[in-house]
Length: 192
Length: 209
Image (tube, rainbow over all chains, first blue to last red):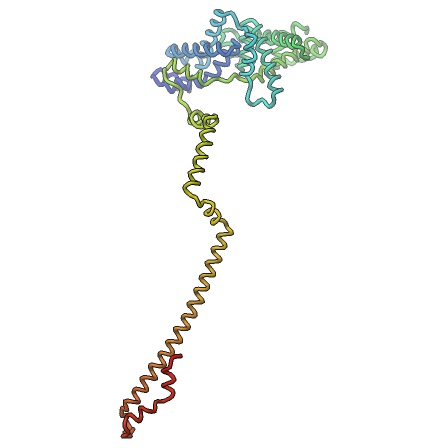
């Protein structure tokens, strides 16, 4: 008996556009967030998200339910494309003027006061800057675990590495990121 | 337990996945080492920031573009999105505000032109005026009732007079005809003498009231 995603894939392969729209709607936000965490730029994230879904659409017929969950399969494709994009561009740097725009885009409508919004925006900026300064492996581990909330086992399956290695990378990434944040706050004149 | 070993096990310590003895050793080390204690606090603070980081809002236009580039079909809009797009969003534009104001003014002038006595109609519909009209109606009905009653009495009197007159007249005529009645002799007197002395009562009754 096929799972929900499996049935959607079956219907997509039979030409059901509504099923494909359901897949895009279900995973679109997650893929976009993942791309944004990696790239730090909205425009690059949008392009990357489009490329990811185009690749998924073209390779739907290659998906096998017995090989793993559909979510994992999508995330693998997303990750591979993101890594390829990173290698091609070698730049996940923010332009000075665009930082504020990106920060504003991150603001949640539920933020109660402007001061709270500013503090949150500043913390977000520090976090993003710190992530960009990490090595790709550590950044990837932090994003998947602490930002996307994926369990260790799922990350291990996605990255095709042992669970112990995942934990080790997460551990090192957290320590490095925490030290970087302290350093940046100190540079910004904020007392910890 | 030293600082290096603590850092290697920091995530496991936070996940509480270490054996009890090792957890105690780390706790003791943290109590003694301010650097490691600060590091643990910094990592926790960083994780809190990660958790409170809001998700990036996805532009629905991006989904639209993805669908057009893949299946070639645009995104199915929900009823709420359609209402927002074609009803609510246009309402909050200056163009709509100006149009609504002009339409309202046009309606007011049209109504005023077609109903010149609108103000008198509106005052006629006030509760005070309605009560006054009701009171007037009741009074009119009462006075009409009184008139009808008087009329009825008048007619009754006339009918009584008429009735009495007709019967008396008939009685008088019958007496004048001198119809022999059983057991009574004919007086032989001429009829004229009898006609000359009509009874006072009948003449009085013939006169109108």
